[in-house]
Image (cartoon, rainbow, N blue to C red; front, top):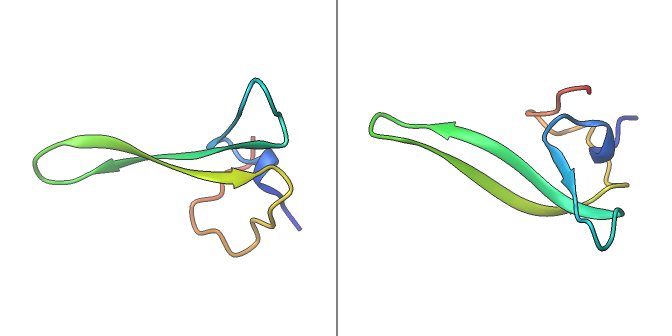
Length: 54
């Protein structure tokens, strides 16, 4: 079972490495931008469609 901390898109916080952000690049017809959502490092990423192994 993969965890968020094993994903290339997970960036941990300096003050607490057990927490971080899942950062994804989104491209639409007009622009490209990044979306970030807070997650924990131990969260199960088995059902995450954007998981990429480091």
